[in-house]
Length: 391
Ligand code: PMP
Image (cartoon, helix red, strand yellow):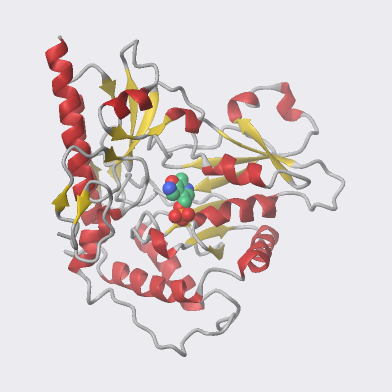
């Protein structure tokens, strides 16, 4: 059981240990509860407690970003080897969702400028929030301009209709592939490295793009704290992003920054030891991928994306695949809508259509709690077995 948990429709009781029979497995959201057992194991050492008088001010020493937290984040990137942080500005936000508009704003021409609005694009399949957030504020500064396929290799891309801002997610959500920008030349790239941590991918080298996005939600699992950060090389872009954060919500919550300090310090102190969070996370995600792959290999109805084992500089060895999501393809002619096909088997997924991919694809989240994953596997085994009797 999980005392103090928030139950979902498959589980009830004070510690979510009572199973609801025949419930629908929900594999839709990327809620990163796979790390909850790690933090339960270290409940006392990772606790953050502070008094009523603490951090009441709008500002902390030096502005609204904790200087000590900045230092710990730089240390974490250095120790994990997943990003070059020392030569870049750090900008905190309430989750990396808030960074989407902060960075697009920072890269776009001033609303008073004569230049046309910049065009924000991403290559399909892409994380839908880039489109949702950008089109919410379409206007003088920028507008959503669809997928890169509309513009790559096209003469229209060279026109004077406004420069491009491309969102690049690496590893990608939904398919876990490492990615690079599609548009070249004058296009600016915002590289979202939410999943560039050793739980989910091998780390070939430290990332060193001009503008990078990170979130605490995926490396530590503290999605509810709402904390993300950007690493920005250019002084002016960093200044404009900070202005956006100041004007929209006066920066990330000071309470959250205190909690993050405790969480990052704990992670750092245990790196490469027996309580390494990345060794723990990789083990969980790898064994989930193995169980899923084994079940799927017994049916011809669905297939998964292919991921090869790769050398990881963090672990210093070749590591097995352990993606955050399965990008499922329905192979049977009649399963044109893969989301619907899985829903009939009592599994809720996220349709490929949301990622501007074909409805033949759908995404399964592998990040949720152990209980959720067990229910998902039960429904999948049923699907695979039903398929066997059909033959
Ligand atoms: N970027 C990507 C690629 C994501 O998958 C997510 C969360 N699913 C986010 C950003 C947002 O994360 P948060 O707002 O929790 O920091």
